[in-house]
Length: 288
Image (cartoon, rainbow, N blue to C red; front, side, top):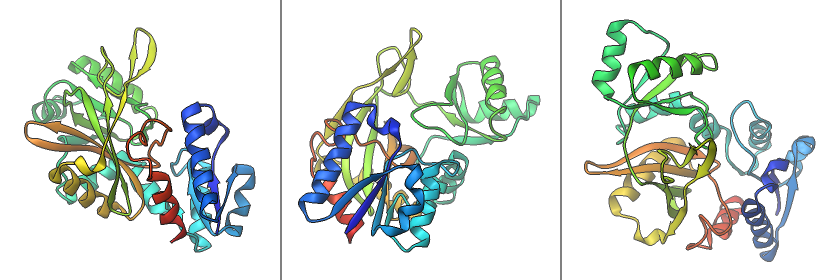
């Protein structure tokens, strides 16, 4: 089979991501398939291939989504499929999905800019302090901020409402790490801890004026707790049958899913550090 891998130039900026992409290519070729990197200038060629694997950043406003739609219309297997992109890229849609399916998650509310005393009191009585403020479209912790006071909430939310008509306001859960559970075709693909850097509160934090990433600690997927596996697979089934990365907090009250992402990070020496067969499993999912 001819597999196209849709990428952008920035996918090759980080050495670990570049090595992961090359590992996908060598894995596919070792079992008799061709694996070609294509860019947005090649987007009209998508139907000429037998399968499409997207590694460029996905959301409905990006070229990767157009490539995904073209693949679907041509009947090609595609990771990520358009439905998964539309669902996972919008935190407001995920908010409704979590509520409708009773997904264990931090308490959250949708906010459209009502700063009346009654509305503010409802937010803070429901969620407490601090709160996490998110625009619907976030990637790598961008446009996700924490407000410790009502004044901070008003300031940050007004800034965010310039970008979006609706925000997700979420209960803050303190932790030293987030579980990242990779799911492929509703089975656990990999498991790791995304650690919170010292002095920060999220995996990518601004500390002393610079962005700092926490460590990634890979864990054997067989060691996943039955409870964590069950809630992650249940949620992935609500979205589709693709490749997802779920961020989960472990609390005294059980696991709480923060979000489910399409197009999850795959960096050589990080997510694959223990379960190195993830490349072959993804290729198999495409060619089957």
